[in-house]
Length: 280
Image (cartoon, rainbow, N blue to C red; front, side, top):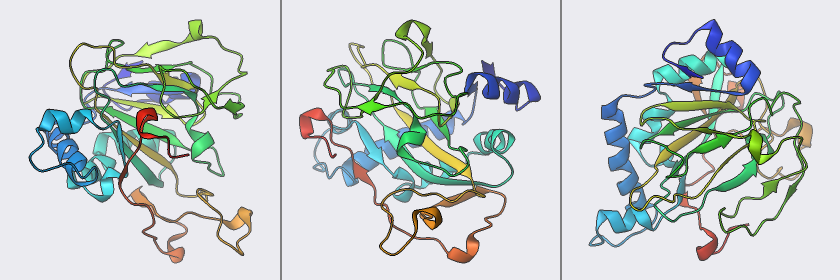
């Protein structure tokens, strides 16, 4: 469902379906600033030649990881007030972010197979929540998100396998879940809107089949600050039950683990697609 205000109905819809759409999550000015940032990130992180036209630069990239570490506009979007207000309503008063991803998705580029974000970013309390902010109108034609409503409610991670489906990029595919593609619904949203969804929600995207145009989106991931984040490799000598990835950004409330300090581990980078060789 689409919401313009953060209400009890929004929270109930999120709990029931695993996702909501927050309209006007960021302003048109902020969308434009992120368009500019996308080109800059593709040039710097992607190391594009200075003389290469902007359209060519953008079309050579599928995804830039951790843009908030290299762009003021992306960092501001991580703190977008309406998004953060929604997060505190569905997660709790203390919220931290650990990742951002800028998807470019030019025409002809693939989507991602069915997956659950918590498979990739495990939390201790199942609080992982994504804010997928559309920077262009996201449509079925240009590869919007598809979701399986309610698929988060069991709170289990489904099996995964490698896939070689040309519709999808390198991401592994979740399978053996009690839903079919017929149960999926497309989440078409205008630029500036945010799809807020639970880390256990099964979702995917299909290729951008439009004849011309990008489907840019900024996907930020958040969780409760009360939870440890056992993400990335467990350091030598650290018990897995105590592992806590500390390359985080607090966006609301207080951090009960502030005494551990903040690390600077992740670096912005461009994700290779299948043509460029998967990085796993």
